[in-house]
Length: 229
Length: 229
Image (cartoon, rainbow over all chains, first blue to last red; front, side):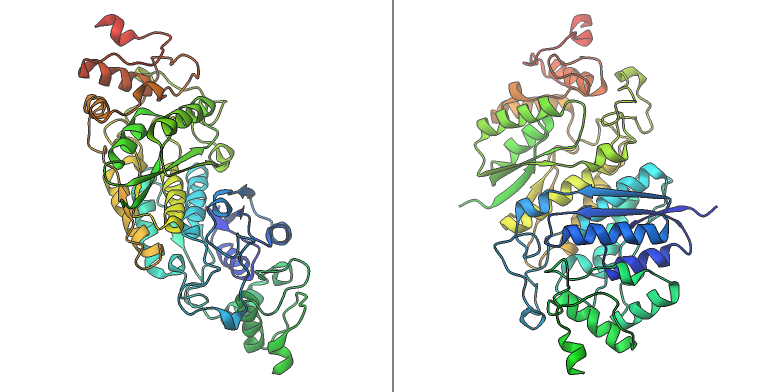
């Protein structure tokens, strides 16, 4: 029987494809974390549909209140607005949620330790937001060391980031080849009914589908990239 | 003006003394995390009293639901009983909460990053429970590297564990010398009104006070060590 793996599934395309990758080697335990982000209702709905499609061994939905309580990000603070793609600074965008991935990985590792799972997967992609410090290879390498030191001897838990160095069009193609349910995913930072098409996350996604030569199956308010292409 | 530091304060003696140590160099931002542990009401009460005494710049109380949802520890799972001190295995006791300190430090670092604080303090003591993997020096050293990699450039946040290699009687003496409000602290794993006096945490604490030659100011159901000494 395949070993278990905990996969962080936000409801977005990258984590959905990551789960599809993980399923080749592991039985899935899908973990979704609500953290007060603008689109959390839509993302939870996506998570539920993705889980229905991937039929995991277990699924767990958690609520983290602290990321919205501490503020500091336009994703969790309603007093800040989410910039359009072209307004994003190349440094650290306002959508960066401070040290979020460390909290998410910590919860995933805690659960994995109890389940005696052998891996924890996260769908981070370093090229998308090179300004996010907690999306870089060095961060995940360092986190693996924390896991080695901070879990029970013999846990042998590996931190896997299979899409880390992939481009969005490669991710679209990989997802399609694996039969990942991309139609259920949600990537927009701003809206929950129709994706805005203009925030950095929408633009990256649309570019990926365009380069892959495939239509994005989710509904958009406007698709400036597609219209202009 | 002194820089800010986030200090994790559970309500126990060690974190209270840690906060007193931190206050020599930093303005305090005290962080308490409720995680479904048996004595969380009493610990929150202790936190409030400690905060009243230490007069921090800021204080924040968070709730983590995941540690009790995933189970695996006698501190959070009411179906398991907390063993007495002499029943504790020398390996990994049932009171170990899987990878808990990584989750706590992650939240503390997220807050510190928003506040532009320069340090995060945790009151871990490695000798108390040598079986807890997330209380060892190597774990904290590895976590410092994750912080260096995963926070904004220029954050320069240091992870401080000032009591890590201290014995309990040294901690009692240090706390008294710094005027730490030990009378408000709570260490018992089992009870909220009178400390049980027999769980591993009570026994360690009582031994510390006994060796320091000082009476423990909190109420106990029984104090086998004191009675027999």
